[in-house]
Length: 349
Image (cartoon, rainbow, N blue to C red; front, side, top):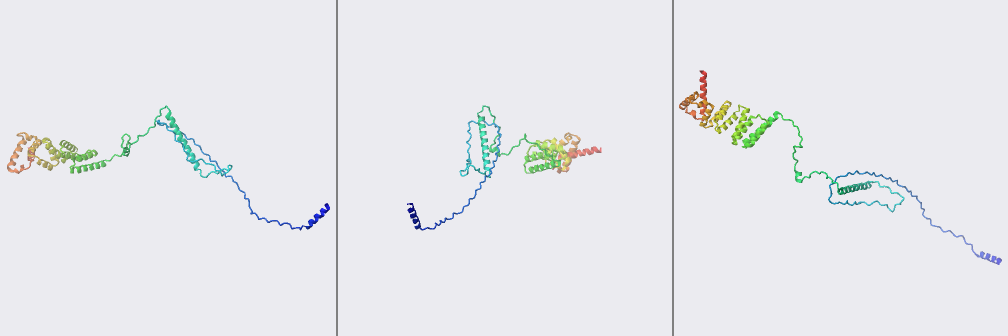
């Protein structure tokens, strides 16, 4: 069996054709890939220390609050930062370059703590039984008072020493006021004129012209007593002041004061004879006769030397020169001539 079988098998093998070996199938070349190593670098992060400053709080006295005020809720305007889910947990996220956001949040937190602290202090102070004195506040001014200019307060004013004006400066200022009074007088404003002259006298007391013009202004206003006083002040400073004596003579004549009129006329005759003659001729003849007697009291004594000489000359002029009596001041002129004639006669004897 084995032999037969073995021979039979051999014959069977002889009948098979030996085939060439199979050609291996060509594989498509796969793309060449390179594995690039990923360099994992850890970003160095710095933790910036936040300086915690303790805010020194002071207990401030606050006026009692009638109703309890609840502190306002603190609102968070920005959500807290969240970790991104795409970043591995073991990798530290680098801090942003701009730190202003973190500092701003810290500043807001500190401010919020301060506000809360003040509110708590106010609430605890309102609940305490100890009375709290409210702080003094300046009185608020109304809009009308605020618009007004500040008023001068002598109590708080500081005295500033100014150099005293010289005599020349005072004289110039007094002259300016004198001219101002003169201008007012020419305009008929006698009250304003008197005020200007008085200001001139305040700057220069020894100012006879100012006193004389004050007397003239008072006489224009009909105030004869003040006019006489002003004229008297003028001639008291300057005795040979014909204008002041002339004003005095007019004031006394208006009151029919023959004695004082005669005195003023005598001084006027000494300083300005022409003005004295003009004044005497402006008077009535009967009043001039009274003035003549006041000037020469012996004229009123009957059969006195002056009275006898006066009557003799009167008869002569009446017979030979009737024009001698044309002027109202003839009595004063005649008595003066009689007195001079008697003085000459006495001098020759």
